[in-house]
Length: 140
Image 1 (cartoon, rainbow, N blue to C red):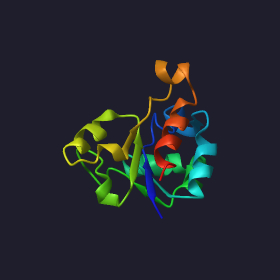
Image 2 (image 1 turned 135 degrees about the vertical axis):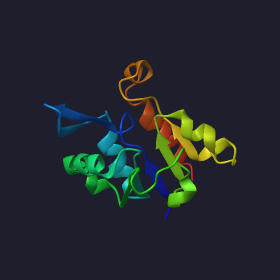
Image 3 (image 1 turned 120 degrees about the vertical axis):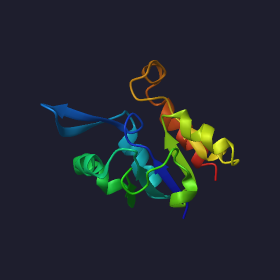
């Protein structure tokens, strides 16, 4: 089964914070439906450059059920998210940094760079990121 790794912050949504505590997760439009659809055909992983403590807090707000595996900076400190480290077929991320680093190894086509949640591009087409992912990974 093919594996898709997702970045967390600004890719899937953002944490809801009150009084410096994480109290929820604000999903970006279409996110839960997308994860449901992809989860029936692919193994989904969550890969964040945040620390494990932060990631575990976020996972408690509905994300955990979608992901077979999760990776944090504590387990995989790296200068870029190399999908070969976790045997993923694609990485979905809002940062072009990882795709640019992957280009040196001929892997950049396996990196889907989506507009950051809340960016002007995202606000202009809130479900554009969903279509971009589906057009890339569902053509396999």
